[in-house]
Image (cartoon, rainbow, N blue to C red):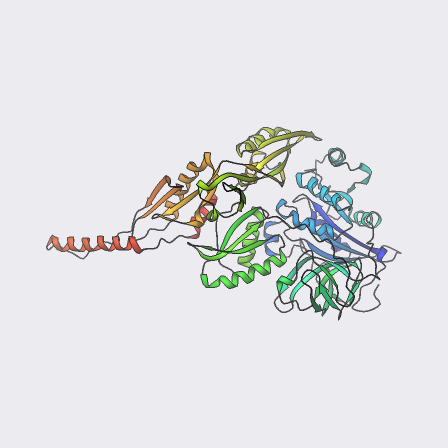
Length: 608
């Protein structure tokens, strides 16, 4: 197959670039394991479950978080070898941007459907995303080794819900390996080979990247046109900076150096790129001496939907947290962040995420992979505030909320949500959507006694516990997909939390007027439980503007100053008590209230 030890070359018509897409937990990573095993990419000794899920978080949670690329060498009997570039993608709605980027590097997609659960919300969303990228879709019904299956029902769902013909569908069991050979053959026969021009100037799309402390930023590229070789001088078109290529390689699945990458190839590139800002996902790599006149279109910029403040517990760790965020953003292109300051927490960053799971994963990665000790504020969404002077302002931080007297109207983001559920759970699911201020749009009954509910829901109301409640009310059968739709006017207000009459900006939140008082009282009660007792009284107040809507207090600790007084003159005891009283009064004026991380989390947990 190779003319050089470190070169990997097959004719372009023997290259296939494809990804695996599916709803969460339908067997994408297990199917990828079988493909690696069948092509000999990993030995039996090295084989573990979810080979491509290399992060500890992915293995612990049993979900794919990052898209993973691998190059497989497949040798059909008596035929020329094929080079299969596979990208395994996440299934959770929060990581749909990872899926979108992966599709841009492929010509085909394997659509995996669970033989027992059938077509789910993310199955539909991922199929439409693949069709938007003009990919050839290979439908595979997985888990056919399970008992009591109704494959006829799944086929009718694929036909009626997705428009996929029965004769196109393949059947497989990723767990046992049954039907996997047929899937590979279908990829070779149905997915077109890449159409890049080997003689054209180099154009390579950066679809992901990582940071190595010894080798710098390492972009993962899909070569669209031309060839790049070790020793070439390349230019990153977004920054205009030039670098010399010191190493090229493919993932097989471990990094394997090669001499060059040609049009249609997928791999990584090392060029001593020390500044992480120089490598942007969606950038175009070209030659310095023979540049391409036109950059590749890149990717649609992801729009953050959820925001929270990230602060170091030790203020001296601020520069280290900035460095960690830069490196994480290199590997997670959907993460946005910018510096901010809080009176309560000091210097930190305002970070934007695609959803609550994305936020949770990013925080855990910062703590585990980069060793950062964080304080995270309650999540919020970006509101559009129209002021009386005719200007508009986008506010994602309650601390920056304008004065109530200057506000003309507040608009909040809504999502277009699709809930797919068995027919018997339609009532509880509708009740849940309605309780979260959902606007009913449509309901469609589908094959297999299932229904698809369409709602417009305020993003702020589905942040907390919505997905868990949906699973609870449908006994785990309902699935959810959503995308940002538009902004709509809402009766919203800022609620402040005051400790000893000092507002704590990190605890402030924005909510709907009708639930403001109830939520404020709940937070006051929770703070009373979690705030540690001081040597002075701590007054907790919840305020809307200048109006106090709830109050509570944390009683002070009292030292037994008269414990050593045995009998004697009562004036001695009185003098000690008076001195203690003066000390407490002075401490109340200058004392600082210690606010632990649990207090910030308590704002989150009110939905429980």
